[in-house]
Picture: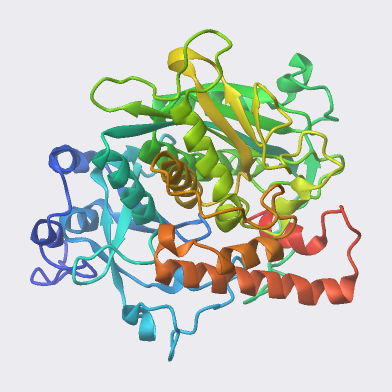
Length: 497
């Protein structure tokens, strides 16, 4: 049968620039080798989702045909900067039409940036239908420089500092999330628009909750979480456990230790894949810290941290003896975390809802800036000994941007290791911020730009100011009850996160 050719062979569509990767020397040998393996196997793929994490840690993507991705892999793809500029309800918080004031000329008029796939993140997703792969991209300006608003590049920069000192951070994920039954298929678009999210999904709890780690409670989620764990293992993610937490349908997923970049990439993928997996089964997964589910207990993201000597593999946090606690080196790292806590707290707890978890009504809430040996009441918990010694930071919420949350931890710890944390006593340093407004004020008055750079620090401040302002305007009319999750929060975060 005759088949017409609809494409113009001389054009390359929306690719960033011919040989963009080679021209700017963006890949190391490992990425170049991975790209060759991908190209050799593209005949077995139908579609590729090229994704990146926006400043909120929400995944943005375009789904390309395998043929189109073959050109994008080494050339990059043109992408609109719109997601950099919008808050969690798609309100444009940074004006791209004139003087935006964040120091990135390329966003004026929404000029494209170039998204370059990282071949080391390429995964072929399980499931029936189109054979679909997923790959994370890095954001670049059109002249080949890393994009100043890219959160993944922030983590790259911090890791370069560690490498320069001959050190390798190792992290372990402990992530709590909610699994609930969908009650209908309504899309939640009634009244939806820029700056106002539609109704949240209507759900019912999976169980009554409040029987910590009860085997019978896990049975209610196991038909979903067991095959989910197997699917993640099949994709190479080092899942360690699925556990039933305290709340009704609250699950904790833990992972074996990974390198820092792998940890951030795994968190980005885990959230999206889990939501997709559950939605396909008529369920709803949410990483919102405290959803408006009757009896919900807040979810946290505990980040376990240690640092190895790259050449020897020695854990510099280890001290001698079973009860020796932390080494002087690890105490310096912990002091950096404490000293930088308020400046960078916005990166660990970035939503209005995340502060519901930090109220005094929650007995194990990490509200005090404290360091304790095997104490779950401390914000920084010292765990293990010898080669397994590490610090668990219990402050993060599971919807935080993984690149920024992890970069903030590693940056602050390294400042402590290098003796750069001692800027003197910081006001309110013994307590964590109690609202997004308080965290934003500490962020804008502090030293965050030393980690993020001025453009991203200014951009995040605009995004979060927009979020705080919209919530404040709603609260003036609705008079929310302190300690109760509001309809605004449920609309804003329950579906998106």
